[in-house]
Length: 327
View 1 (tube, rainbow, N blue to C red):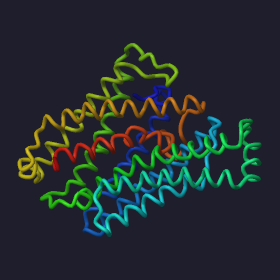
View 2 (view 1 turned 60 degrees about the vertical axis):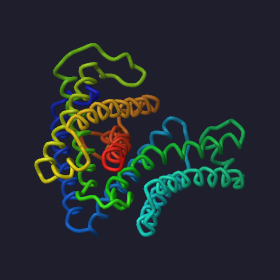
View 3 (view 1 turned 90 degrees about the vertical axis):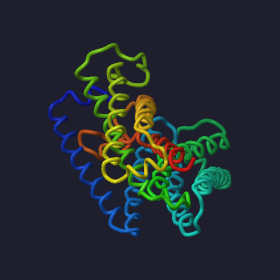
View 4 (view 1 turned 180 degrees about the vertical axis):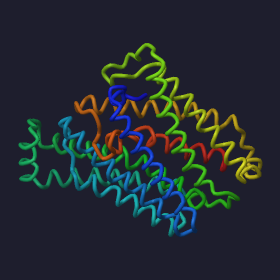
């Protein structure tokens, strides 16, 4: 459900198209490198790490504009912690459950460590309270700042950890699968999210309808865009099913009793989750009184403006893959 004010300008639309082409080329290159050998699969993790780091600091900038200070060191360290947990989990053959538990433990330790630091470093904390304009107690300030930091770690870094799990699906599940499920999950995630975003924008522009009563969350959101996003996600999901079914996955799908209608249902869920991610992002930006999370992508805004739905859909794709191929 695109903000129409950002796309009405023809020059802006031209930038969006060029940027979108470049994004597709870069993503395709990383997917192609991933397929070269068993070792190059880790190159895709670099792309995930890039999304984590840049997305996290875009969220940090918006939080500060909302007068919600954070510990930059905590935000910068957590993606490194998640990457270290990834390597350790792969080397020690841990399951995806333990990987997620370790990442969650990292969040808890991050909060406790920052809170303890803020309490003990009294002079530094008092100085920062003055700079941030806080007039509450020192303990409350440290608690709020530590909590804000953890929220910035969850959205998007922890959510993107599920993309690590998708990329290394077979390793994390310790199951001998006869097809590259990770490739299926990655392409399903990016293509379906792209279809949802694109169809929401196009239907919102071409089919005039009543606005959704969410003015506090963001302008330009219409029921036609909402429906278009769900339909687009359904189309993207079903296209991926038939492409992979025709490209050598038919036997694999038959082994696991995978049906086309399951991808169709996934598309509906994708569309709804994508809308939820867009609403959450719009709410955050509205509170911060900013148009975009950043300006990294010409015509689109920041990284988070493009992956605000995708970060939540990472979880959906992984759960979908577990239910289809492990249940």
